[in-house]
Length: 177
Ligand SMILES: Nc1ncnc2c1ncn2[C@@H]1O[C@H](COP(=O)(O)OP(=O)(O)O)[C@@H](O)[C@H]1O
Image 1 (cartoon, protein in one colour):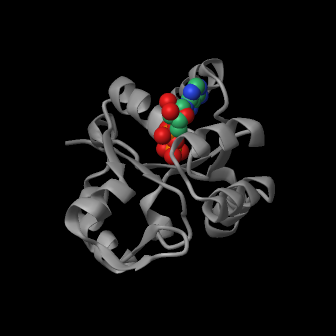
Image 2 (cartoon, rainbow, N blue to C red; image 1 turned 30 degrees about the horizontal axis):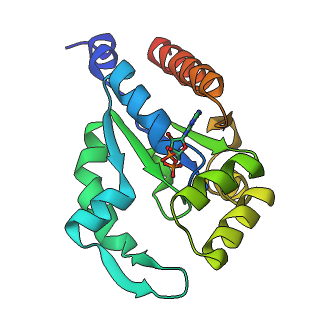
Image 3 (cartoon, protein in one colour; image 1 turned 180 degrees about the vertical axis):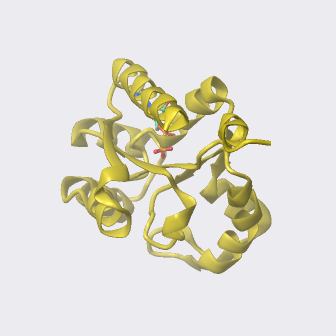
């Protein structure tokens, strides 16, 4: 097999990150379908496999056992072709991802989405602050090379369409490289 053939078959790993409620699942579902990628929702995997260290009563959420999650993901990531979703990104090995997309969302939209999820006041406030301060975007820029980190808007259906196009264009360009 030539190196060109290998590239035809090879697929990159893409990370979709952002504050909870920014629209990661909404986008990943569409991209996984359209680009035929394997969608790895880290929170879901952690829950299903009990990769949980303890439970945070204050914020009413499980605390992820990152090492167990990464051991589970490593063989999948080596195969390529995954679209990974998580609300944090600094603990993954940098080598895993060829692109990192950070979804951002307006506060009014995020407030409505998180209220709808029944988040308590403290959790709601902390997530809104996370978005206001651009915490996940900063985390991504500090954890990965700047030229592979891209910001996407997640407010409206039109935003989602644009985001799909952006990721698909990135994918096409990556394939051509
Ligand atoms: N671009 C969008 N346009 C309209 N609604 C969206 C968009 N993105 C997400 N939503 C809606 O917002 C809610 C939260 O989205 P979700 O994808 O679950 O967020 P996350 O995975 O980041 O926590 C869902 O009800 C989803 O249908």
